[in-house]
Structures are given as C-alpha cells and as structure tokens.
Image (cartoon, rainbow over all chains, first blue to last red; front, side, top):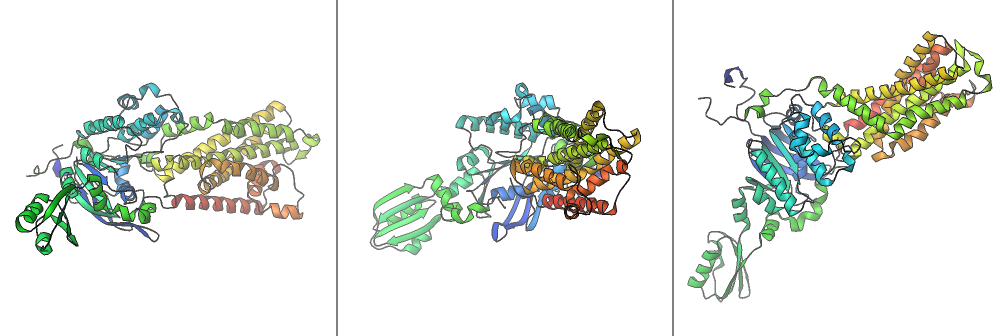
Length: 321
Length: 266
C-alpha cells in the first residue's frame, strides 16, 4: 500500500479523474447528438446528468461505457480507455430495462456474471445483500420489475466497481421506491464509489447528487451544486406600469436577465428581484408593481431550451439504427 | 510529499485490478449456457427427437442392406440423419444470439470483461456439444435398430467428421441470429435447413449429373454432407470440399460482419 515507488507513475498518475471527457462529440449520420463536452468527475462524487430527453445523456453514458466511440475527442475512465476499465471490473452500469436472460435463474445470472471477472464477492453473499436470496432459484422472466432491478444492482456491484453508471434508474418507481433506492445508493457511496446517473427529474438530481451537470442539445449548459443550479433557475419576474424609464439602467442592475417594455408595461426577469423593485420604486414613477416567482420546473425548461428543441432532438438520444 | 492528495480506496485503484485470462472464457459460464439450452424444449426436440424420427422413417426402406462403400444403405441414412440433426441443433444454438440481443443480454455482456472471441468460443463449444448429442442419439438409435452396418473405425470416423461439419451451420445460425431480430430466427432456419437438406442430397439421393444435381451442388449442405459420409462411401469429390469451404467462409464472414456492426441498443 505504501510502495508508491514501484508504481509506474509516468503512465499512471496517482490521482485520476473517475471520468474525464475532453472535447467529446458524437454524430449519428447527419445528426450531432453530442456537440463538444468537457467534463471531469472526481473520485467519490455523486453526479447527476440532468437534461430533457434527447439531450445526449444516454449517448454520453454509452461512450463512457465504451459501447460506442466518440466521433472526436477523448474519453477516459480512471485514466484508462473505457474498454480497459471494464475489463478490470472498474465500471458497472445499471440500465432501466433489459439486460437479463429470462430463462436463467436469479442465481445462475449472478454466477454467470461473476465468472467473467477476476475478483468478485461470493455469489451467496451478493444475493443476500441484494435481498434476492429467497428467489435465487426463480427464473428471471418470472421475477417482478422490482426484483429484476435488485438483480441488476447485485450484478453491477459484483466486481466492486469504482464507477457506477445509472441510466434513468428510478423511472417507473413510486415515491417510496425511489427513496428506498437512493438511500441504498447513498449508503453505498460512503465506500468512496463514484456514481454518475442520468435523470430528467430536477428534484431527483437536486436531492441526491453532490453535483449536477445540466445537459441540453448535446452541450453542458450548467455545472454546479444543487444550490447553484437552483439559484440559476430561481429567478423572478418583476412587472410594473411605468411612464418614463431608462431600460439600459435596469438592464445594468446585477442579476437582471432581460428587460422588456411594451407600451407602459415593463417586464424584468432577474435573479435578484429585490434590487429591481427597489430601483423601480425609488428612482422611477413605477406603479402596480408585482413580483412573480418563476416555477423551478419552468426555469429548468428555459435553461435547457427543451420546449423548442425536443422535437428536433428526440430521436438522437441513443438509438442509432 | 507523495501523500498530498487523498488516495483512492485501495480496491478502486486500477493498479490493483487484473484482467481475466482467456478473455473471460470459463467453465462456469459454459456450464450455465449448456444447462440453459438443455432446459429449452424446442432444442431437445431438434436435438434428440427429430433426428431419430427421421432416421427411423428413412432408414426403414426396403434396400436397407444394399452395400454402400464400406457399409450399407442403413448406415448411409444414419450418417445423413445424424448430420442433419447436428446441423439443425448447431444452427439453433447459434441463433440463440437473436434472443440474447432482443433481451439486451449481449449488451449486458459488453459491460463485462468477456471478449467477443471468448463469447464466440463459448457458443461454438456449445454448438459442438449439442451437435455431439444429436449425433450420439442417432447412432445409438442405429445400434438399437440393428440395420446399419459398418466397421467400428468407419463408424467413429464418420461421427467425428460429421461433428466438425456442423460448425458450418453454427456459423449460419449466428449469422441469421444477427440478421433477424428477436426470436424469429429459428422460424427461418428450420424450414431453410430442411430445404437445404433436400437439395443437399441428405434426405433423398439425387441422380448424379442431372440438372437438379448441378443446382444442388451449389447449395450449402451438399458439400458438408458429402464430407461427413466420405469415410463410409470412400469417395470425396473435390467440388464437395470446395462447396463446404466456400459456404463456411460465407457464413463465418457474414456472422463476423454483423457482429462487428452490432452497436445498436436492442
């Protein structure tokens, strides 16, 4: 453990990003699904890929898993090419559907998967931990959706991966199931495992991720903690009737996103609505002033531009045929 | 000074991890695959019941004791039916990739250290094992029936040669399994192989030199069927070998081509 001198430090630096994307793009024919992503995820982080359907989340995850090659740019997982990281059992993924053979039993599925890795936890222990020991002899095809999902988790954790990827992991779960799921994931990440999950639920990303990477139309549009993303999305709208007003002065107030004057109706979008209100009441003849909070979901839609782009980019999310 | 950065937990350090030998190929996986296949009722019918039924149907004709090469007609029919049964079984084993793709299992396997070569090797061994089973039961049926006659050496050599020839159809099964989505692969392979068997001189002898015979000599079962019977007949024409090699090449290339393009999420 302390023999750092024997390590070939020239090729393998001691601290490596769990995931490193450099200028990654991906085209499917004429469609550009990923338009240049640079991202570094640190070991132990729980990161959410947040974005609407068709944003390029799944395409990016496929490249991290080595299932597809980027059109340009470089993908590294713990300093290795994705295929090499997978061959060492360092990366696992849990997909929301499929990935199981219906005519194998639960135990056979775990034993089969375990046999492919060099080091794995004992099959019996894994079945017990996942709470599927009592259905070990049941055919996978006869298991409920929840049982199949527990089986997928058992398989993913067999090789003790350093990086766990979850693609829309809680789709179809009820609130209680979702909470139980994330509790077990959070308990698991205490071991230092890095988790990257894709979701289109803002609330889920906010509640369970250390860091949110907001993706829209194949690009990262925001990257920060839940609080930072919420701040980005938490602007308010200030409306007032005005006679004479200097719109450039308002636009210059810190935190103002946009100023619009139609007739005598002034509409200002701003992060700091108090400053705008104070200015309007102190320095102008504004009347009928009202402050409306933008819904967080609405703000998220505005940020990701999904309302006007979903049609054109829906088909690009990971289904090249 | 080397401890300035927080170290990863040891087990997450890539340097401590090893890559499995043989691309992940192992006996546990092969055993589970075999058990899984033998649980499939359709496979059992193809492998055990169908070839025996065919042998008993075709091998009971009147001239069963007429001499053919180093044996008799009943032996000739037995070798042919063992070959047909093994080919069908191997093709159905190969075509299991269609089901595996449809259920997302192929994709799941790509998230493990299992290499494509090790996967193919497993499938080939599986096809050979099932083929051997099919050949075995037909031969046992032959012994039990008592009509086939050839010396032990010819008997064994024919069986082994037949087994090797079935690999051609394992490759065909994989090719079709990749071409045809979902579980329909066997619906195509079943009737297809029956047609090839008629054209390939497996079920009914076709008069040599006739137009039918010339057409037949280009079909995929013609060559391998001749080869598998060659020890018995003592005759191995060059065009049969050419036919077998060409079709093996076509099926293997086709399977490899489809497999390399298999990037889609199914």
